[in-house]
Length: 102
Length: 371
Image (tube, rainbow over all chains, first blue to last red; front, top):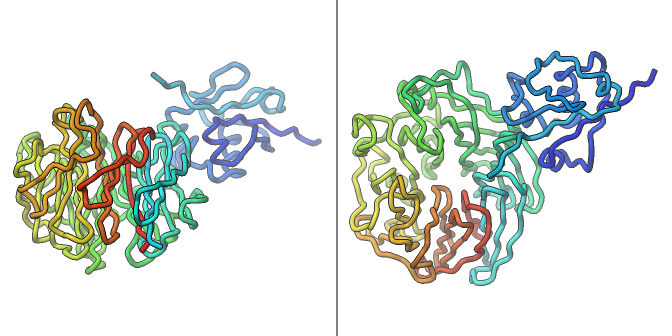
């Protein structure tokens, strides 16, 4: 069975850094977790290492947020299973910078 | 044909400003890395096409970029800065001990002998080195491991290692400065370090003449006289004639001895430049007048350089990395402001002109000279 790719939406600065025009499509072996998606992203685009999560601890950078299916998964553990809608490619996994301004 | 290339780091990207040797007409290119903070861009003294840039963001952390064509194109290189061993702790704002945490690269110093070797001064204060053109970085941990390390503390801008000076006559000698720890010297290529702060007097620390804890804003050396260093401290302009063994004050008749940058004329080792700022609590020029001060006597006697600079209602700051000199026969002096202006003088500071006026806040200015 051919598995559909997971869609990842990156913030504009990281798209520029990775020289991407649009979303990233990743093939991720199940189980589809936060850690496996981020690992696949960094493997396919090594320039993103360290920009979403720490090189060594693999902790999410403080001002990075993970959204999907209108839910905030930023504070979940790395082995958290993402929703089927994300795993099946129906809904994107969204990485974005926390709101800041003023 | 002679010319200059000015490398400007700002809060929102990097800019490259070029001109011929007359330094009258300028071409502005950028922003490179739009939207990112560019703390420093510097070129190799051995290969003018080899540039290194520190690119960072509060969201996405630290990136390093390298150009091999003079800034036309850039390649991301290694961005992993890992403290060697157990990082340990330093003094925090509240007086408690706080773990060393890497935040960003403040300063890049390409080697004088190898274009693939470059040093990086980082926050929290440490010195890193790459010998593969920025692909990987290793800490020179003898500095952070100095016995005084637990006494170092961050200034308001963070605990940054912002000055790295390589002695052109002695490859084993390196000077660095940290805010707020002070100045240090290595005589064994960065393996071991010695605080060189005798003579500094800082009223904002419990023991004003302590071995460490001084908020050194910048140090500068003329390559022809490597034992003479000049320092802009958090109040006081200082000078040493013995490679930091002892410092003495040369603030003289300045309107304020607070400020950030200090630099030296390319051909006159006793001609130095500072930009007085009113105080630590009012980071703008005294009386709303943007004045560079020049001493042609190695300190103490200073003259205001004002021709072409705003002399009313000016309330910008000039940060520690944001001044430099070129090496053309008529020495050029450059500085950038937090208001986004980059000023240039092609006659040693006598006359000034804004190259560009409306960049994002300027963090750093470096210049490459083409003879």
